[in-house]
Length: 286
Ligand code: PMP
Image 1 (cartoon, rainbow, N blue to C red):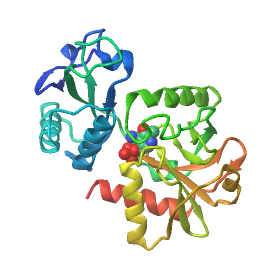
Image 2 (cartoon, helix red, strand yellow; image 1 turned 135 degrees about the vertical axis):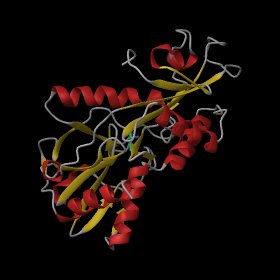
Image 3 (cartoon, rainbow, N blue to C red; image 1 turned 90 degrees about the vertical axis):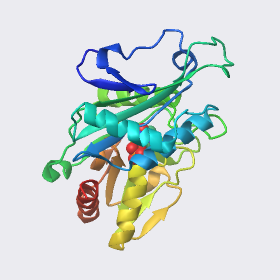
């Protein structure tokens, strides 16, 4: 991934892709003091750019550091990077981490570095393919108690459980894994939130120990606009047997229907999933 043409925004300047390096003694690498974002640009415009930059700054604050750029400056930096790379549709990856001045747990005086990279990541537009649904494994790891980890931050360190779970799921022939939380409730996937449909209403877990996705919030909005009832509540895994449809959503996954979970629960992607796939496609291109 590091040998490409193009530009990466790095601490205020656009640098050639291959030169965007950091030192091995970066605190972010050793101690996980690192946060990031995942965004998409459609037709030359970054979707919910402000919201992503707000979450980016908030994630850093939760990890006790301050991103030294305002939301407006971050939005402008993303636009400049998009232009420099001549992208109209791409994935956008801002990342911020503590530098190498202090190599111990305490790192108050380290420099905060910020970079923004972008690359091509086509989305699965074909609705017919999407409507077949993907299959999810159930992860071994759980989302931690918010008193155990900074669960609401998009912190790099929290992604160890996602990478382990995703690898295990793929090894076992699934597309992704559904994670339960520390109380055994349904939580989210390794990079996306989850929704269920029962009798025409949408049910989704309360985002109290996992990322409240910007796509999740968009779907809630779209459902309201359609007059679809939306219920945020505790969902236990056994309940999945009674749901009609299921889909996951996230910047990368967009809205993707699910046909089965853990070889135990099956769903038939139907009218509500289709409506959300279509409405989300319209929204990102609006
Ligand atoms: N949960 C996790 C663990 C994620 O990595 C993501 C993707 N950022 C999401 C949920 C969905 O968030 P968003 O809709 O903001 O992309």
